[in-house]
Length: 255
Ligand code: PEP
Image (cartoon, rainbow, N blue to C red; front, side):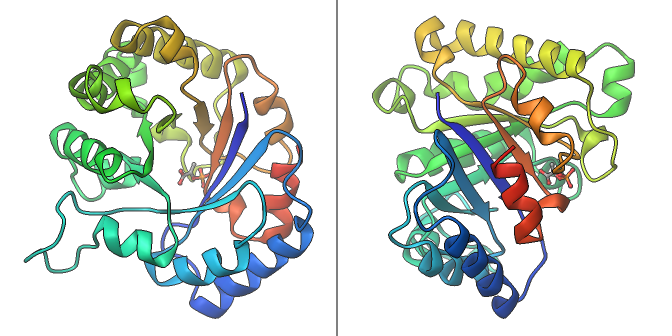
């Protein structure tokens, strides 16, 4: 399976900064990304068009929206639609990122609605799941993954996902590892990915579940990326802080 190396810029970079990063990436990757890798950038909305323009025509470089509202259009002040993101050049969407869940209070129900809507609109959706430190300490890892995955995926198992099997990816991001510098250890990643894969198999059937890319995210950097991406059952990386500088992101992409 192709490995996905994704950059989540969060609320960072003005347009000139984004254009500079994207230009550096496009220049370094003009012959395409390293074999078997997709590089995916989730910029702030105002930067998407500049990044998509710089990536145009280069193989295996893609752009996504960090957020969206699950309606075609209407009275949703401050929100952005899938059509607007598509028009700017995005073809991926993030759903369920821990900052959306824990800072903005997005519920499993809203995340399920967003996942379904994004897929129906023809986007690829990266669904993020993961436990807080308290949940981990209370041995709730499996329960949290079960709840977060089944609420979003169960309603789609016999519908859109049965028709478009390559539209969804899952990112396991333990909340305690995001932006903290505390990367999960190899056993913790293996255990969580095995649990997530088992839940996906129960929801979607074995062969489908095995084709869903399962990414790890949480304090990945250029030093630890190589050993994490080499783990069994890790099909990619979702990177926040260390994706903000092009040389660091390129090192992770090549790890
Ligand atoms: C993220 O925002 O998804 C993330 C994993 O952030 P960081 O790499 O900074 O921990």
